[in-house]
Amino acid sequence: MITAAAFAVNFDGKWTTKIKGQDGGDMELTFVFKMDGEKLTGVINTPNGDMPISNPKIVDKVLTFDVTFGDMTMKHVFTLKDDGTISAKVEGSPMGNEEMILKRQK
Image (cartoon, rainbow, N blue to C red; front, side, top):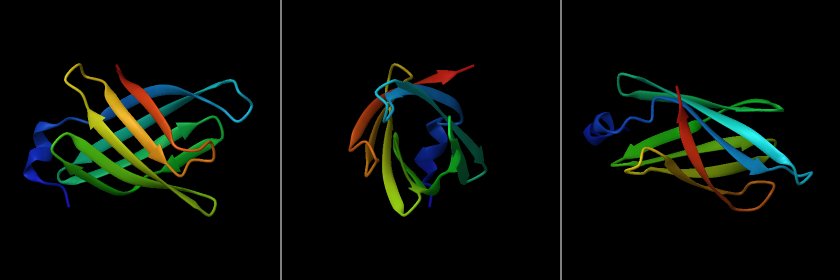
């Protein structure tokens, strides 16, 4: 369920970040979100392929969703900041719990 407040918050579009990969090098991730009425869909573009999001929910400026990778489910909490970036926390990643900053792409 997406609340009425969700329409004032715009997660729609492409957002990128870099994280440390298992080999220690930088790995770019692109998060693509699309609002269609009250429905939010999304996918994470990774060097190893796309991963769809599931169970998206928006409350105020916070988007939560899950991503399944093999037999793991990673919980994501994205907070839209006043400067237009997203502060993101991921629990259950193969690299452990992670924090990242995402920037909107044009």
